[in-house]
Length: 524
Image (tube, rainbow, N blue to C red; front, side, top):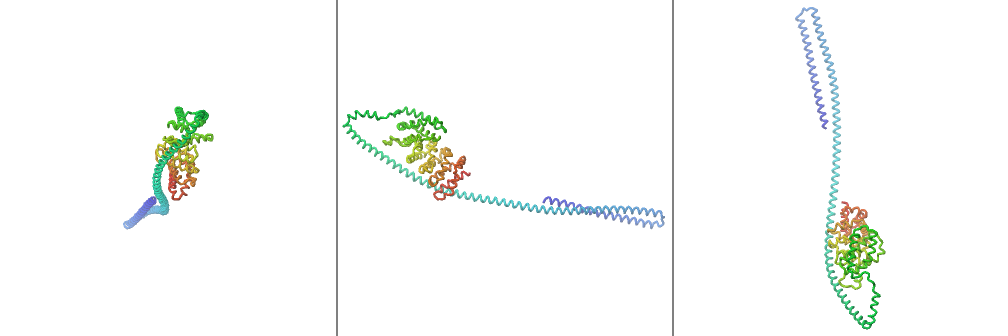
């Protein structure tokens, strides 16, 4: 548009110059014609004056004057002819210039029309693009606003469901605590009555046996006195390890503690020599378990640590334990309930898994879980572990001995009752505490995720309660970025997505919420 206006200004200046040239030419032509007419008039008047004044002039002067007049007329004619040619040429140039100006005007008009049309098209195109862009941006913002609104509503409903679940769990916890207190009081009273009945029965049996023995002794005193020493010597078994040798047990405990602390507990891939020597020592140490009840905890702990770390190393290298099945089962039975306690039932003597020392109690429970197959004994060991994990000290000790790997074998649908106990332990460890990060590191293994994936694939045999507890643990693990690869490798993500879509019952709202939270953490 600016170019068009500048062109029009230049065209107007040129047209104004052409008009000034024409006006000047017209004025020049008029001046020349007046000059010529004055000249002719003066010449005519001079001739007339000369004729009147000099009536009698001679012929030569007349000829001279005529010649002079003729030459002047000839000069005037030549000038007029030249001027006429010049004017014709000027007129020709003016006509050509006028035609050029008309052509320029036509070109300028066509250029102006084309520029106007192009400008209108460009403005229309840019307006359409801007309108499309604004519409797309508006649509995108409206969709984002809808998604945010849906997310806010979902979070609000999730918060409400979590609050309701928390209130119900708090109420259930209070009820369970009240029942637990009542049961503890009942158990204490029942145990006291049981002890009294046992003492009464022992007293009565002792009196009866004493009376019968006294009667027999009075009849056969001589014969019994002569033969009893021989029979005792014949039937007495040689005691390979003296029961009262505390120094021997202390020395062996120091050696086992040294072996456990420097070799077994710090070696992820033990040598064949270390494993073979540990297998040789294991039966000998197992035969000394009955002698450990009267020993101190400083002597008991190295033995139990040796049992535990030897079993862990055997599991890590995948060695067949068929030759050690009897030994391992005997170790578990002695730790769960020793043979002399099972036979005599004295008051005040407790099994190793009920020891007042926390390390001995937890290690004995872990050894029982890996050596005994009776469900009732395993349930008692799980209960003791759950009781010890209620404080941070118990959690630290449990994770110190890698208890997660020890109980992971029971996290399977085949062990329905024990699987629930395992989930309870994982739930206790996933609570906010100083050991939470250590627990998450223990769970961040491929084996753990594979077991968990198998658990979530079999919803019917596992139960919703177990899955709810494990979903809380998965929610913690999903916040660790390095675990995303393990979620993908174990095929847990499609299983969780399927469950979050299919579980629509009211009692599965908490589980669905946790599963969606896991997916959200993995996608963030």
